[in-house]
Length: 505
Image 1 (cartoon, rainbow, N blue to C red):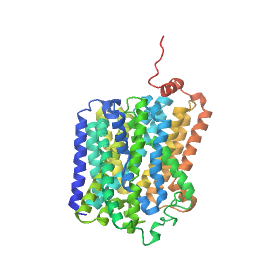
Image 2: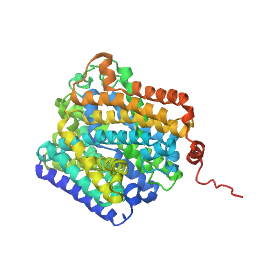
Image 3: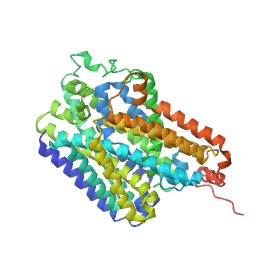
């Protein structure tokens, strides 16, 4: 690729992100603007923004990389990431918005009347946020290296700086416009090059592999088109565990949940979720096609650390010359938009929690938020330099597993079961968070083991989520005397539609 095109692509995305963020700054005046955009974002704009931040580097580059290496069973990732919003729509979206909370810890304290549960929830939000930001910064390094030839660390540093400038300037109000723009940029950047790549493929007579072994899965050695086989010794367990993590983890992701607080009411939250389902479904049609073409035109990337770059490699291999360089530059722009959008949303969520639960003792308002934003970005940036090279989608999958084992039980039981107590919630959060945390550390520092231990360590959600739910229920049953006095009133607030008016007569 012509490196000059890569520089221009990264520069244009960076400048446009900063310009749009600056435009949003004109509307950011209050603390509520910085945290939840004064709860005034309409469903269409909010759906684009949610989709923009949700479609991270794992979606733009990681899915194609996993499909190239392991085969079609990895389609469970995009299926699960989309289906998670269906679960969110049915169980959480409207009641959570009616709670009036700013963050997940806010909800935990309001529902359970416990500062201890709030503190533990805050730690979980920060841990999940940092775990999710880290692969975005690593992925940005991959894209920067392929597009410009610069060292990988420059990509992560650039994303960190741009995110900080936007977040410090306008908070949630500013980031909303940026993320909405970035969704449509990502969709365009992925779809236009694909049109030309498919035309080239058709010009080759619908080329099929001369070596059928190209369509054999990675380590498992099973057929590429087998939808239930998964890398590991126990594929069926791994598949179900991945489904549990992605289906249930979405509702516990701090950068996803915080966006629903920006809707005016519960009805708008439901409309937003339906729109998000459509936008995600439209996007996720594209990465598998890149993966299939990658198996044909870039078989040398199968099973290598370069698999995450297959989307960026294809134009130069299939088209070449200036046309290939221009398409690669467009894809690079889309990839950087993905890293920026997701990192921005996570920074907002983590900074909100740190500013409320740590900085609030010394500083308040916008100043505390801005200092917290710096902490929220710098820590995962350092971690991205220290952690071993793990596939972007794999690390993001671990973040989903942690969210599913902690905040999913808290939200589902907290919204739908009045019997949840502070002791039960605390015990469940500690069990789910601690077990998943051990798995995360193992994945980031060591190579995967074989057998049942390796399968569970690779995909822990099928074990940790039921344990977290069971712990919350059992401990709550044993501590019913600790039920908050205002539980019934809060439950009514969660489940009463805004259109229902109280008869005060």
